[in-house]
Amino acid sequence: MINATYPFDALMDITARPPVVFVRGKGSFLWDDDGKRYLDFVQGWAVNCLGHSPPVVAEALAAQAKLLLTPSPAFYNAPSLKLAKALVDHSCFDRVFFTNSGAEANEGAIKLARKYGALHRSGAHEIITFEGGFHGRTLATMSASGKKAFEPLFEPKVSGFPKARLNDLASVKGLINDKTIAVMLEPIQGEAGVWPATDHFLRELRTLTREHGLLLILDEIQTGMGRTGKLFHYQHAGIEPDIMTLGKGIGGGVPLAAMLATEAACCFEHGDQGGTFNGNPLMCAAGLAVLQQVADPDFLKSAVDSGLYLESELQRMSARHGLGEVRGRGLLVALDLRHPIAAPIVAQAFDDGILLNAPQPDALRFMPALNVTREQIAGMIDALDAVLTRIGAARRVA
Ligand SMILES: *Cc1c(COP(=O)(O)O)cnc(C)c1O
Image (cartoon, rainbow, N blue to C red; front, top):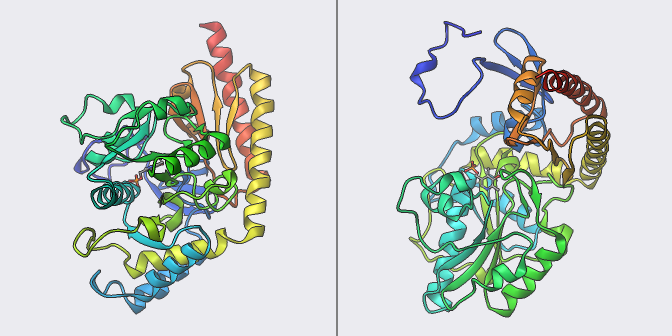
């Protein structure tokens, strides 16, 4: 129902959106301006790790807003110092650079690697990335992405991002030359449809990059902050990358992202990197509130349990409807539909009050709040089951 009170055509038309305006969110639920309630398994695109408008984040924002919004990036502020220290304490990294978006964090990682190459490897600057990878929508991060649809866009691209194949070490080795400075990947390719790098492959990459003196950059913008059941995905593989980027979940709903690096990789000199809002106290206060919850071992344990439950319920449903595999880890899970029927399923589920995402025409992705309940998972499964039955029946008639 297009609501005449909203001037829809004043926004640039950059994507197809359902003609509904969301006005309120709480936990796993969203409400539109008509009062209709939706069970949300998109959660701001794997952003709202504590659900919609979590009280701890709302309170941290309100308190910080009254205290100090921003003193300028040229001065220290308390929330950014505290959040950086907490991230360093919980990870294998030594220093943090805060940004306002994931793409900007990846831009920072690319710049840091190029600087490292300029300083230590006589100007080596190529960063091996992967087919199917997604790193953002700035020019450099689109160039680093291995998304087919990006290829013809906004030419010329930023050069220096040769593409290897995920879980194929030989394809990486074949691209290494004296211009190479780093290997960069998502531990699970989220936008491509939830395609995991194996832990074995991540360990092989760590060994290979060490042998060649290359930096290993993990884009954990989607997999980090507890999404896959550990605070950071690299911990599953037992490796230590040189650089990691975080986004999405780190702010629990507000625009916050970060680039973390080991001391050895930190080589920016004054003037190399910055930004007006980077590390502003308001967003960092939200980040602190989020990290305090998500880093709690009991919280992570319950996210793991929810992930296992979601996975097993999806597997049973897949068997009932003759669909394909369930892949992913923790609460980043995809269901392979084996046919390009994701769009009508998402549209029907939307009408039924369930928000789902289709990263590919033949796959559904589930990225609920990390504190989603068993009951909410069961509710989503029942609703999706009904949609699949209807769509399956329609397909058989057609
Ligand atoms: C979402 C995402 C990005 C881009 O983050 P933005 O905040 O949209 O710029 C980069 N890498 C991965 C893996 C992502 O999932």
